[in-house]
Image (tube, rainbow, N blue to C red; front, side):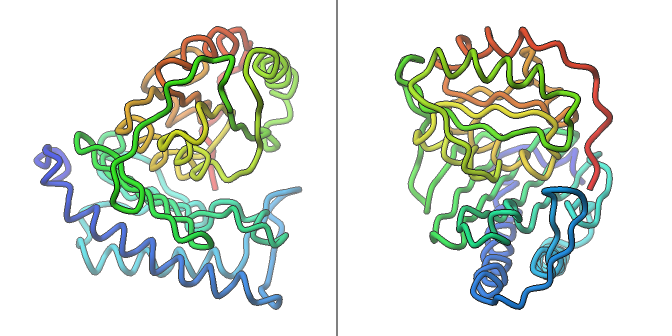
Length: 277
């Protein structure tokens, strides 16, 4: 089925289903944000899962199966799975640490991936009432209004990033690149989560986003937003395809991408194992 569907119009029913699923999960997230009794479990230092993550993922899975059938596999941050063929790639609560600490920069990220290429992407910010959507070949939108990446020179660029806390072996390479970027742009932010960082690149708030070792559920939807808004998404060494597998992402406006790639491409990175839930 995945190979037979090719045009933006063919993907529209999947986009509608993903958008409704994201809003339904967002209601779960908002209710949990106001509830101080939410149960929290630490998967590893700085990496949490809450009952809200699990409940939101269950809502999304149920909604997508009901609306689109079982043609696509389901790959979730909490449930795991392989990104192959036609599959939904879902982070039901991106920015769980922010959520646990009461910081409202959290997102719901849903992508439909066909042969390792995102074709539908939805990033919903439930605490702010923002929804970003894209279909491959159909443009990118913020609350149904078309969006484009910025066109500022790199010296005026505002970049976002995230620290690769799950891959401490990459700290030396990452912080070397971070130092080079900080010296070449206007400023750098670290708001999290990655799906929202990418959405802000897509609509021109940020000029670029770079991070190492992300999961496909962190980046699949947001990367499609950036591409459909006129931006460029590669890994740190200018591979336009490997980023979904390695999780090493540089997403930027065309004007900012090349100067930043000159810095990220200096990083000596070992080939990581695929990120798992």
